[in-house]
Length: 236
Image (cartoon, rainbow, N blue to C red; front, side):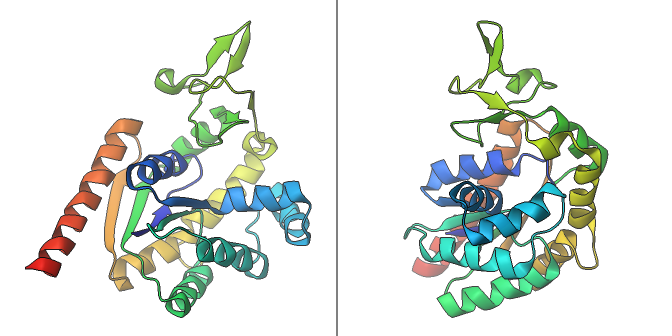
Protein backbone atom coordinates (compact mmCIF):
# COMPACT_ATOMS: atom_id res chain seq x y z
CA UNK A 1 0.00 0.00 0.00
CA UNK A 2 1.38 3.40 -1.00
CA UNK A 3 -0.18 6.65 0.20
CA UNK A 4 0.42 10.36 -0.40
CA UNK A 5 -0.53 12.75 2.42
CA UNK A 6 -1.42 16.39 1.78
CA UNK A 7 -2.36 19.21 4.14
CA UNK A 8 -1.00 22.64 5.04
CA UNK A 9 1.53 23.02 7.84
CA UNK A 10 -0.52 22.83 11.03
CA UNK A 11 -3.22 20.53 9.66
CA UNK A 12 -2.05 17.47 11.59
CA UNK A 13 -1.19 15.33 8.58
CA UNK A 14 1.95 14.07 10.33
CA UNK A 15 -0.15 12.81 13.24
CA UNK A 16 -2.55 11.10 10.84
CA UNK A 17 0.40 9.62 8.98
CA UNK A 18 1.62 8.02 12.20
CA UNK A 19 -1.82 6.52 12.89
CA UNK A 20 -1.98 5.06 9.37
CA UNK A 21 1.60 3.81 9.62
CA UNK A 22 0.85 1.93 12.83
CA UNK A 23 -2.42 0.49 11.50
CA UNK A 24 -0.86 -1.00 8.36
CA UNK A 25 2.82 -1.38 9.23
CA UNK A 26 3.94 1.13 6.63
CA UNK A 27 7.04 3.28 6.51
CA UNK A 28 6.22 6.91 7.27
CA UNK A 29 8.45 8.91 4.95
CA UNK A 30 8.38 12.58 5.89
CA UNK A 31 10.28 15.14 3.86
CA UNK A 32 10.73 17.27 6.99
CA UNK A 33 12.26 14.37 8.92
CA UNK A 34 14.48 13.53 5.96
CA UNK A 35 15.73 17.12 5.90
CA UNK A 36 16.28 17.17 9.67
CA UNK A 37 18.21 13.89 9.48
CA UNK A 38 20.52 15.27 6.80
CA UNK A 39 20.91 18.59 8.63
CA UNK A 40 21.77 16.85 11.92
CA UNK A 41 24.22 14.56 10.12
CA UNK A 42 25.84 17.56 8.48
CA UNK A 43 25.57 16.15 4.98
CA UNK A 44 26.14 18.42 2.02
CA UNK A 45 22.48 18.10 0.99
CA UNK A 46 21.36 18.84 4.54
CA UNK A 47 23.44 21.98 4.91
CA UNK A 48 22.17 23.32 1.61
CA UNK A 49 18.56 22.49 2.49
CA UNK A 50 18.80 24.22 5.90
CA UNK A 51 19.23 27.63 4.33
CA UNK A 52 15.92 27.33 2.48
CA UNK A 53 14.04 25.81 5.43
CA UNK A 54 15.16 28.56 7.81
CA UNK A 55 13.82 31.16 5.39
CA UNK A 56 10.49 29.35 5.01
CA UNK A 57 11.18 28.65 1.35
CA UNK A 58 10.65 25.49 -0.66
CA UNK A 59 13.80 23.36 -0.80
CA UNK A 60 14.78 23.10 -4.50
CA UNK A 61 13.98 19.91 -6.39
CA UNK A 62 17.64 19.10 -7.01
CA UNK A 63 18.11 18.74 -3.23
CA UNK A 64 14.74 17.27 -2.27
CA UNK A 65 14.17 14.61 -4.90
CA UNK A 66 17.40 12.60 -4.33
CA UNK A 67 16.69 12.40 -0.59
CA UNK A 68 13.07 11.30 -1.09
CA UNK A 69 13.97 8.75 -3.78
CA UNK A 70 16.59 7.23 -1.48
CA UNK A 71 13.93 6.82 1.24
CA UNK A 72 11.42 5.26 -1.17
CA UNK A 73 13.98 2.71 -2.33
CA UNK A 74 14.63 1.68 1.27
CA UNK A 75 10.94 1.33 2.18
CA UNK A 76 9.62 -2.00 3.45
CA UNK A 77 7.53 -4.48 1.46
CA UNK A 78 4.28 -3.40 3.13
CA UNK A 79 4.57 0.03 1.52
CA UNK A 80 4.80 3.63 2.66
CA UNK A 81 3.01 6.86 3.38
CA UNK A 82 4.78 9.87 1.87
CA UNK A 83 4.19 13.07 3.87
CA UNK A 84 5.34 16.56 2.82
CA UNK A 85 6.27 15.65 -0.74
CA UNK A 86 5.46 16.64 -3.42
CA UNK A 87 5.15 20.32 -2.51
CA UNK A 88 4.85 21.67 -6.03
CA UNK A 89 3.45 20.67 -9.40
CA UNK A 90 6.96 20.09 -10.74
CA UNK A 91 7.76 17.76 -7.84
CA UNK A 92 4.52 15.87 -8.47
CA UNK A 93 5.56 15.28 -12.08
CA UNK A 94 9.03 14.17 -10.98
CA UNK A 95 7.54 11.81 -8.42
CA UNK A 96 5.29 10.21 -11.03
CA UNK A 97 8.30 9.60 -13.28
CA UNK A 98 10.32 8.18 -10.38
CA UNK A 99 7.54 5.81 -9.29
CA UNK A 100 7.20 4.53 -12.84
CA UNK A 101 10.94 3.81 -12.88
CA UNK A 102 10.67 2.02 -9.52
CA UNK A 103 7.54 0.16 -10.72
CA UNK A 104 5.48 1.58 -7.87
CA UNK A 105 2.02 3.12 -7.95
CA UNK A 106 0.08 5.29 -5.52
CA UNK A 107 -3.01 3.62 -4.03
CA UNK A 108 -4.44 6.48 -1.95
CA UNK A 109 -4.09 10.26 -1.82
CA UNK A 110 -5.53 11.91 1.27
CA UNK A 111 -5.89 15.64 1.76
CA UNK A 112 -6.65 17.42 5.03
CA UNK A 113 -8.38 20.71 4.21
CA UNK A 114 -7.86 23.58 6.65
CA UNK A 115 -8.37 27.35 6.60
CA UNK A 116 -5.12 29.28 6.33
CA UNK A 117 -5.56 31.34 9.51
CA UNK A 118 -6.51 28.26 11.54
CA UNK A 119 -3.44 26.49 10.20
CA UNK A 120 -1.23 29.39 11.30
CA UNK A 121 -2.69 29.34 14.82
CA UNK A 122 -2.02 25.63 15.09
CA UNK A 123 1.59 26.01 13.94
CA UNK A 124 2.43 28.71 16.50
CA UNK A 125 1.00 26.70 19.39
CA UNK A 126 2.49 23.30 18.61
CA UNK A 127 5.38 21.85 20.56
CA UNK A 128 7.84 19.29 19.22
CA UNK A 129 8.73 16.15 21.18
CA UNK A 130 12.45 15.34 21.21
CA UNK A 131 11.70 11.59 21.19
CA UNK A 132 9.05 11.48 18.46
CA UNK A 133 8.14 14.61 16.49
CA UNK A 134 4.77 13.06 15.56
CA UNK A 135 3.54 12.97 19.16
CA UNK A 136 0.85 15.68 19.12
CA UNK A 137 1.37 18.46 21.66
CA UNK A 138 -0.33 21.84 21.43
CA UNK A 139 -0.75 24.57 24.03
CA UNK A 140 -4.07 25.81 22.56
CA UNK A 141 -5.98 22.51 22.50
CA UNK A 142 -7.01 20.70 25.70
CA UNK A 143 -7.18 17.30 24.00
CA UNK A 144 -3.48 17.38 23.08
CA UNK A 145 -2.16 19.84 25.66
CA UNK A 146 1.33 18.91 26.92
CA UNK A 147 1.65 17.27 30.31
CA UNK A 148 3.45 18.99 33.17
CA UNK A 149 6.32 17.54 35.17
CA UNK A 150 8.00 19.49 37.96
CA UNK A 151 6.62 22.71 36.56
CA UNK A 152 7.85 22.04 33.01
CA UNK A 153 5.70 21.12 30.02
CA UNK A 154 6.62 17.69 28.60
CA UNK A 155 5.24 15.45 25.87
CA UNK A 156 1.75 14.23 26.74
CA UNK A 157 2.49 10.84 25.11
CA UNK A 158 5.96 9.87 26.33
CA UNK A 159 7.12 12.58 28.72
CA UNK A 160 9.88 13.67 26.36
CA UNK A 161 11.39 17.14 26.30
CA UNK A 162 9.44 19.68 24.25
CA UNK A 163 10.74 22.48 22.09
CA UNK A 164 9.50 25.02 19.58
CA UNK A 165 10.81 25.13 16.04
CA UNK A 166 12.23 28.58 15.36
CA UNK A 167 10.28 28.94 12.14
CA UNK A 168 7.03 28.04 13.94
CA UNK A 169 7.20 31.40 15.74
CA UNK A 170 8.13 33.40 12.64
CA UNK A 171 4.92 34.66 11.00
CA UNK A 172 6.75 35.69 7.85
CA UNK A 173 8.20 32.19 7.47
CA UNK A 174 4.78 30.63 8.14
CA UNK A 175 3.19 32.87 5.53
CA UNK A 176 5.86 31.90 3.02
CA UNK A 177 5.25 28.20 3.64
CA UNK A 178 1.51 28.68 3.28
CA UNK A 179 1.99 30.76 0.12
CA UNK A 180 3.66 27.68 -1.34
CA UNK A 181 0.99 25.26 -0.11
CA UNK A 182 -2.10 27.23 -1.17
CA UNK A 183 -0.71 28.17 -4.60
CA UNK A 184 -3.00 26.51 -7.16
CA UNK A 185 -0.81 27.37 -10.15
CA UNK A 186 2.60 25.89 -9.32
CA UNK A 187 2.54 25.11 -5.60
CA UNK A 188 1.30 22.22 -3.48
CA UNK A 189 -2.37 22.81 -4.24
CA UNK A 190 -1.51 22.63 -7.94
CA UNK A 191 -0.08 19.16 -7.24
CA UNK A 192 -3.19 18.22 -5.23
CA UNK A 193 -5.49 19.30 -8.05
CA UNK A 194 -3.39 17.37 -10.54
CA UNK A 195 -3.72 14.20 -8.45
CA UNK A 196 -7.47 14.71 -8.11
CA UNK A 197 -7.88 14.92 -11.86
CA UNK A 198 -5.21 12.62 -13.26
CA UNK A 199 -4.25 10.01 -10.68
CA UNK A 200 -5.95 6.61 -10.60
CA UNK A 201 -5.45 6.44 -6.83
CA UNK A 202 -8.45 6.76 -4.51
CA UNK A 203 -8.70 10.40 -3.42
CA UNK A 204 -9.73 11.14 0.18
CA UNK A 205 -10.62 14.69 1.27
CA UNK A 206 -11.14 15.38 4.98
CA UNK A 207 -12.14 18.56 6.81
CA UNK A 208 -9.26 19.39 9.18
CA UNK A 209 -11.22 21.12 11.94
CA UNK A 210 -12.31 17.83 13.49
CA UNK A 211 -10.56 16.00 16.28
CA UNK A 212 -7.62 13.66 15.72
CA UNK A 213 -9.70 10.49 16.22
CA UNK A 214 -12.53 11.77 14.07
CA UNK A 215 -10.22 12.60 11.15
CA UNK A 216 -8.38 9.31 11.52
CA UNK A 217 -11.63 7.34 11.47
CA UNK A 218 -12.71 9.05 8.26
CA UNK A 219 -9.41 8.41 6.48
CA UNK A 220 -9.11 4.82 7.68
CA UNK A 221 -12.71 4.09 6.69
CA UNK A 222 -11.99 5.25 3.13
CA UNK A 223 -8.84 3.13 2.98
CA UNK A 224 -10.63 0.05 4.31
CA UNK A 225 -13.35 0.49 1.71
CA UNK A 226 -10.73 0.84 -1.02
CA UNK A 227 -8.94 -2.30 0.13
CA UNK A 228 -12.22 -4.23 0.18
CA UNK A 229 -12.96 -3.17 -3.38
CA UNK A 230 -9.50 -4.31 -4.50
CA UNK A 231 -10.06 -7.72 -2.91
CA UNK A 232 -13.44 -8.13 -4.61
CA UNK A 233 -11.94 -7.23 -7.99
CA UNK A 234 -9.04 -9.62 -7.42
CA UNK A 235 -11.05 -12.63 -6.32
CA UNK A 236 -14.39 -11.86 -7.95
